[in-house]
Structures are given as C-alpha cells and as structure tokens.
Image (cartoon, one colour):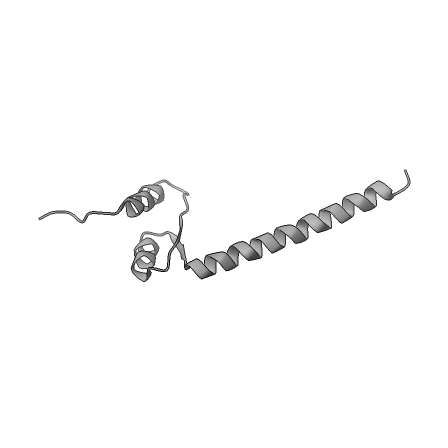
Length: 80
C-alpha cells in the first residue's frame, strides 16, 4: 500500500509544526485544507478574515504611531 502524497504546502506545514514552539497560519478558503492544518495544530484563517485581521493591525499601528508622534511633539515643544 502506498502512502499519502502530501502537497508541498502540507509538507511545509507538517515540518514547521514538528519544530517545538513553532507557529503556522495558513490562509485559505479551502475548508479541507483548513481542517487538515487545524488537525496538525496549525492556525487557519479564511482569506476574507485574514484581510480583516491585517486591516485591523494596520489601523492599530497607525493609531499607535499617531499617539507616539503626538507625545514626542508635545515633549519637544515643552520648555526645558
């Protein structure tokens, strides 16, 4: 009996998850792929959800940068 042939992506996920403390996030709309990766201990996200995650992270980063710049600007304007 022949073994199951893994795709290149499946092989990379399996090898990465074999390393202690490693993390994998697979972004796909293929539910079978998400089930496979999830079953191996990886994290999964649909394409639309991943885009929302990135947009949210970008918004948070912009807010943090705006606050940092405001703080630095105020610190610079303060009389010494």
